[in-house]
Length: 106
Image (tube, rainbow, N blue to C red; front, side, top):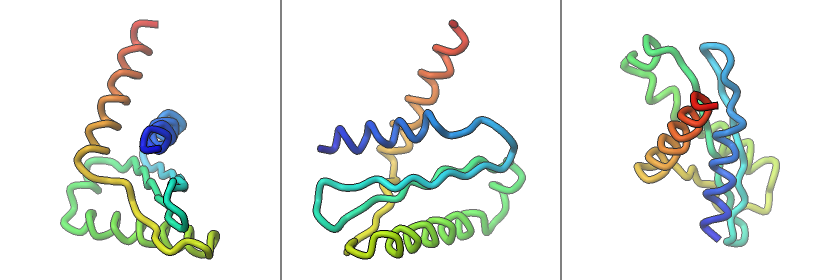
């Protein structure tokens, strides 16, 4: 069941557009648990914006808005989580680098 969730997250990473310096993608991921969903927020922001003191707060606000939108769209949800954390970050980075290496070899 977690494997299905991780496959959907990796698919979202693959679909993340590689255009522009500012890009965002929000993906809703259903859970195997009833009435639970996950929101994956992907952002591409230039380094000078990420370096600002309040960037983390702004990113958190965007994630809260995305979770609220998921709750509005799917009113049966009791919990909406973000599947972020050290494990996901590592998984996404590994997947990204594997795809980048494969692209260079092609």
